[in-house]
Length: 203
Ligand code: HEM
Image 1 (cartoon, rainbow, N blue to C red):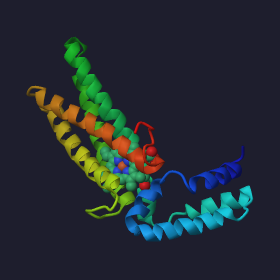
Image 2: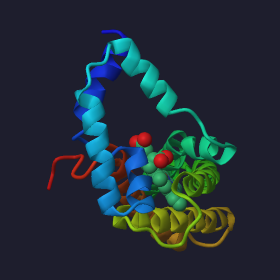
Image 3: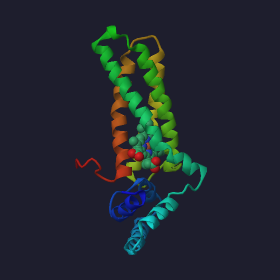
Image 4: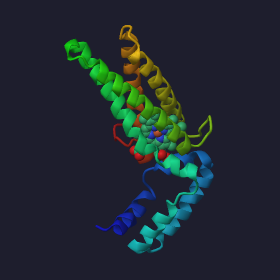
């Protein structure tokens, strides 16, 4: 199937489907009445026959970057993989260290936590560009995701400090458990925004 045919098919199904990543922002930027009207207009357009190439051209034009901030915000999904992977791996490695102290994983954990913290700060910063610089969101999911992500980045910096100091590991262990739980929730909320409500199909 060509790119054009894929976009044509997606166009037909997404009219009524998932909120999509711009959906999260739109839900915040407009009143629901405006959204209904906008969807009606989109539905009308969808009813007009469109070739696969026209659908592809329209999708490319619709996605065009509008400003530097817009482009920076679009890098957020890319950046999220690093803190999720590195900090969850740090928590797992710490668990291994509890079970097998002889493995000597302390240095590896320091590397994972520090890398994860850098990744979390970058991801959170890009998230603010993606979501807009405001303190309150009309969308509950985006509001939860915004503040959970901001707290994760801050606590990850604290975890780095804990990982590098020479005293006991209890503080680091507690913080890593908190971060792991918060990251799983964060990934879920991100998925809800990008793929639509109940994207895992478990509700
Ligand atoms: C450690 C911090 C964060 C992590 C791990 C994270 C993770 C994610 C994930 C996994 C997604 C779904 C991406 C996809 O599947 O394409 C997502 C989407 C999103 N996140 Fe975050 N996020 C973080 C912080 C933030 C913050 C602080 C904000 C807002 C201030 C934010 C705003 C958004 C928005 C608006 C989306 C929808 C996609 C987009 O427009 O880029 N995120 N996030």
